[in-house]
Length: 178
Length: 178
Ligand SMILES: [Ca+2]
Ligand SMILES: [Ca+2]
Ligand SMILES: [Ca+2]
Image 1 (cartoon, chains in turn brown, red):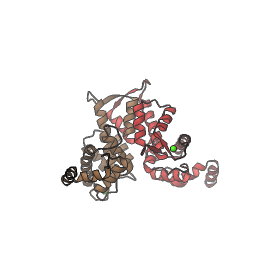
Image 2 (cartoon, protein in one colour):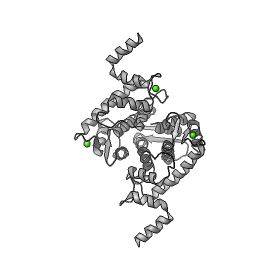
Image 3 (tube, chains in turn red, purple):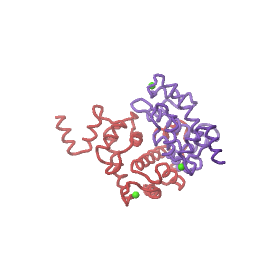
């Protein structure tokens, strides 16, 4: 019966097949497994596979129970975010070179609703570009980090005034883990 | 004359030879050039070469004029830090497996003088390890980030009380760039 159920779930949800095959017994994926899983799923399209570093960042973002691994529910959440980011990326990359350029990334970040100063936008694009170009892998790493940092900040900004009191340990834990 | 001077400098400072050869005309190295330069210098010893990601982190840490590149003075500063971190790493890795384990990294971070909670130490080692092991490349990325974040925090902690007021933009700029 459980075998039949798994087969039915796979038909309804092909994502489950990829995830289940890679996750194995424990039902969770670590960074290496996530990299394999995403590569096999084909979400990169013609872009080069995600780097291990980006996979580790993805896991940090969603790993709420702090096991360093990702369960299927977290994976589905990641998948939804990745699909949206990929669509954005393809929309910006109009010449289909597989890369976007500095001012385009700035526009996307602003369009996503992040309110950042010009200097911060410049610092971000500089950090995630190579020779002035941003590949999909780095674009995703940038989106994941920005989202996780903003979530972290918002949780501490009770008055929603855009200012928080941070103790050293909390600051380091957040910035090191992401 | 300038050729003779360069030759004399190279004898006095072999590091300059590596740097100069890679930096080319502009006298600065970007992340790709830094990776080549460090690999050729042999500072990795038997450890695998630094990843591009770690080289980008190194440049962020020392790039004070914000060009995304590193001049020779900054490179020398990096070199001194790298030499110290390498010695630490070799000292911890007593079985010479090329990796250190979780509790050993914790000990080193504490020994370097960072005052962090057990949870933060656990979060850090989890982020920088693979299957419970930390390779030299990730160890250096961890040391560079921790130093840069602590410097950032200290500059804002005027009362030296371990608490700072951070606005969203400043927080994102720091945490995204490192
Ligand atoms: Ca393009
Ligand atoms: Ca150069
Ligand atoms: Ca060892």
